[in-house]
Amino acid sequence: MGFSRASAFLGLALLGLLSCESPSATFNAFPIQQPQNLEKKLGSRVCLISAQDTLNLQVQYDPVSKRNTFTQSGTQDTLLSAWALHHKQLYYLVEPHTNTTYWVHAVRIRSNEVQGLATGWQQMMDLSKVVKRGTFPELVQYQSSTNDSIQLRFNVRQLREFYSAEIDSFPVYRFASTVAGGSLPPTLAAPALYPNPAQQYATLSFAAAGKRTVQLFTTSGQCLYRTETDAATLTLPVAQLPAGQYTVRASGLADQKPTNLQLLISR
Image (tube, rainbow, N blue to C red; front, side, top):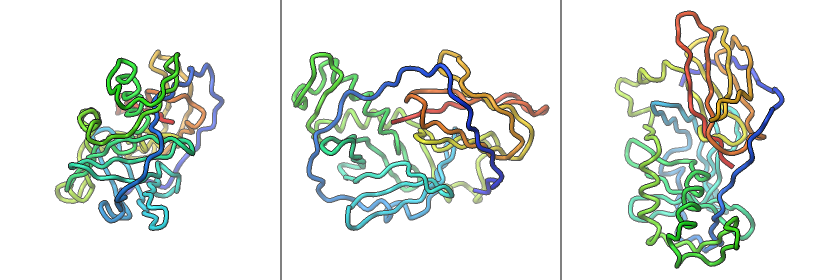
């Protein structure tokens, strides 16, 4: 995608962290029938672009484990590793959560776009909420008295409507090769933040190098990070941050307004 290799690494201490929230619901382990090869479907290298950010990914299918591993190009950091099931135009990515439980999130893959990829934390959070409200009682196999642990039976037919609605709430990513003229859309002139959602790190990429101030805020406005950089890219370590929504603000260039980007951290 032509991003500069120049980078800076942000390693400041975290202050005033919020309490960590994780999905209450998990799926009891189930047999993986007819696992799909997403490397064959997407290609081994793929660039996905949206109005908010860019994902440069490598996809590798393991014929032994039948799992698909998505890594960030250039760093080899794993975004997710999951089995893929296909049912009625949706792909369901099944990630081991413990030895006996799974997380499942749905992805829509069309000829020129992808929606919902690597949103497992958010989809499982939303599923936890609707189950607590009494939806899908027939799928509940165990529920603690405090609702902090819910074990579900996975049934793709009963869950399809829920997952289809979930996918519609996420940004649409287009394959870079489908952009007219082979060039990037105008929105990519603004800083790009990827991967998003992030788990271990997030990279902020600018169109050009220049002296900037970068800050990371909680939803309540608390500043957790602040650093100066003149590089074209900046890597933000987020492994110690609680899952949730954050705002990354970049400012400082005289001819540009401050830019705010939304960052979702998943666990």
